Image 1 (tube, rainbow, N blue to C red):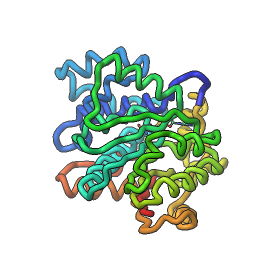
Image 2: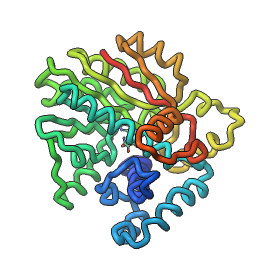
Image 3: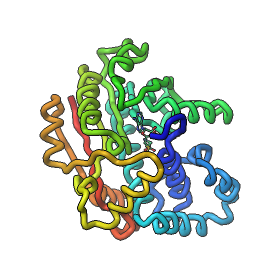
Image 4: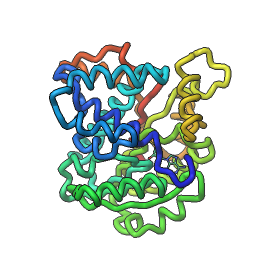
Length: 302
Ligand SMILES: C[S@@+](CC[C@H](N)C(=O)[O-])C[C@H]1O[C@@H](n2cnc3c(N)ncnc32)[C@H](O)[C@@H]1O
C-alpha cells in the first residue's frame, strides 16, 4: 500500500457496490446504501448522481461496463459484488446459528455493521491504519451508527501484527466465544509469508470454534508469463495504483495449507458457482460473461 494514503482498492470496491445498488430487479443481489459515503475522489463528485435516482439505469449500465473496460479487465465489478453478497449471506447464516463475535480483516469500507441488524453481536474491524483512519473520519462526519458494538484495530499485515491484535482488549475478552473471521479482497495484496501468518493467526482467533471465510484468486494471476491478458492487465493496474498483487493460489493446494493450520470442513466455490446458485435461488439473470472468473471463495471451520 502507498504510504500515508487510504487504500484506493478499498475505495473502488465501495464504488462497485454503489453501482450494484442501482441494478434492475432481475440483476439486483447487493444493497449497500452506505457505499456512496465512502467513494474515493473523483468518484465522490458523482455522489449527487447516485442519489438522484433519475439516472439509475444509465449509471448502472455505464458503471457496470465502462470502468471495467477502460482498465481492461471486464467483470471485476460483478466479481467484487458477488463476493460481497456471498459473505453477507455467510455472516447472516453464522448469526442465525448463534455466532455473535465477528472479526473483519482488511475491512476497508465494509458497511455490514451499519447495514445488518445485529444488536447483540460485536464486530472488530481490522485494517491498515491509513484506510481505517479515513473510514472512521467518514463514519463520524456522517453520524453513521452501527447496529452492534463496533471496535477497530489498526495493523499492517506485512508487519508482526498478530501480537498487536492479541493484545487488543476486544480479543482478550470472551476468548471462549465462537467467532467468525472474514478476510475479503485482501489476500492477493500480501506476500506468501504474510498470508500463511494470517492463517496461523486466524487459527488462534478461532480456537473456541467458528468460521473463516475468505477469497483467493487463481494461481494463474501470479504467473509472470501468463497468457491470460486480463490477468496481466489487472496486475499492471494495481501496480500503478501502488497496491500490487503478490499472492494467489488454487483450491487444492490452498485446502492442504488450511488443513495444516487446523481448519476443517473445507468448502470452496468458484465465483461462477456462487453466481449460478444465487441466480437460481432468487430468479436473477446473471450471465457468466459478466463475471471475471478467476476467483474462488473458501469457508472453513476450526
Ligand atoms: C480491495 S480492499 C478490500 C476492502 C474490503 N474488504 C472490501 O471487500 O471492500 C483491500 C483492503 O486490504 C487492506 N490492506 C491491504 N494491504 C494491507 C496491509 N499490508 N495491512 C493492512 N491492511 C491491508 C486495505 O487497507 C484495504 O482495506
